[in-house]
Image (tube, rainbow, N blue to C red):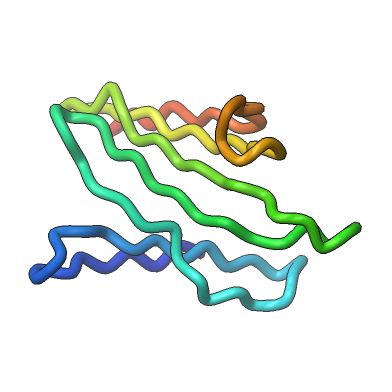
Amino acid sequence: MTIRAFDQETQQWSIVWLDNRNSPDFRPLLGHFEQGVGLFYQVIESPLDGKPVHSRFIWDQITEESARWQQAFSFDGGQTWDTNWIMDHQRQ
């Protein structure tokens, strides 16, 4: 389940991703849309060694009928990203 909230004052979106495989983590990914692309970032701790893991969501290719979402992780402070999930959404 995803919870999204828009903060009018900061003009930023908060995205919280919850699933039934992990303990709830209510720290949001934060970001905004610019020129039709939404970029959202969060730093979490690796469950294996406690080191920081940067996560990124991208919303792009947004039309009235479709959108694309991507999830990526970085283990070097955001210098390089490993995209591990892409979803293309299509209105039926």
